Image (cartoon, rainbow, N blue to C red; front, top):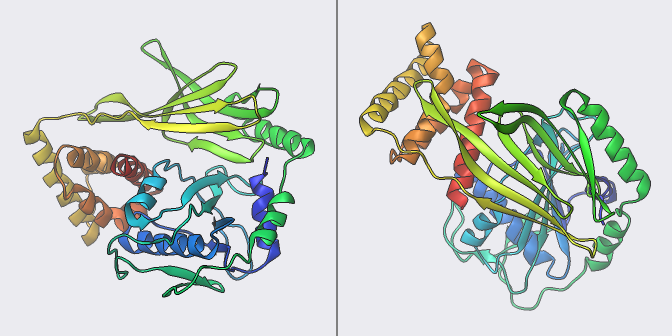
Length: 377
């Protein structure tokens, strides 16, 4: 089994960006330009490496390879995005890899790309790229190209060697368990061994709501791979497991006028097999709550007025500050109830929310994350 932290280190040490490996300080697939550039690189790496894996490492400085990290990205529906925009879409896996020197909420993103055969191209127009365009890696650059012959396989031996040198061992596994237990000691860390092989660690702050047990500030990691499976300072989740599987049900708290309820968002089941393999299956189980349209119209207009006050730098009253705290969630509720411009308005407010304070900006990111899951599904 490949230790993904070792794999990232070996990729960074092996070479500069090339035809099977790219690195980014960050990506932003929430915006059209960022989404288009991400699709371009996926397309180019898939076409450049038809017989082996390609990789994108996210959270690394380009100049000196220093690991800065990015926010945990738990979008299990990213394959749906690839399928929607690319013909002959490769198989994509996005994993969050923790590094000991990074703060809890930061990881390195690792995108693994596996071509499935056939030329990959854009299915439709996006940003300044036209549908039908084919991209290829020219050194460290993803370029449009016209193909007249089959692509030569020049990287399989190199990639194979890098992956072989990144395999796990008992020392790495034990170090990973101790690192997790020490780092999360304030949140009742636990571990369980599945099938005498897989070590899964988790921690969270327990709370009981109407006889139901939830956990907040949850951190879940598969130590063998050095992959963080779940992390959030905001979400509430329920956890259950048996000898063969580990299940996480993620909830979101939504409501209006201080009347909030927990709604199940996504169920993730990790199944461990006897042949030293595992699978992760995520199912969106969210049903958008419906609210009175008259009330939502009032909230929508009030939110727009608040954004305008932020743009002008006007001082907010205590009541307006309370409304601002709820603005990301209420804009999301408006969108889910048919106010299609609400998310555009929320994105417009992003820089002003970020400048106002970090707590409100975290709520913005949470609302955008929920939206992304719903849309990609």
